[in-house]
Image (cartoon, rainbow, N blue to C red):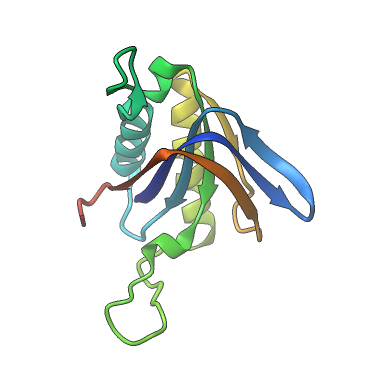
Length: 149
């Protein structure tokens, strides 16, 4: 499972000119599910996202999690994060999980974040989405549960 995590002051997802998910301060998470992901990856990703200390404390140091900061999370599915560009000019997406399996794992991460007490908004799995954000910092973190980087 792979994620691009951005600390934001606001973020939203629009589908067909309608906002389907929006948050104020918190995390925008672009989440890609791999073919070899399992429930352990779901738990690991949710725990990492909820507890990642990238919000400023009273001294301006990145020592607070999104939970500590009272922020929200917007999770958007993005299979292209599993694109392999090592060969040729067209990415290969064979490592990305397909359809129902990918959606189930995506929904599981969302449910796990909510179970941890977070307010979570989402895009719509498989839809053509427009994502808007104001990156705070900017702070952008990459997470891969297989530790590929």
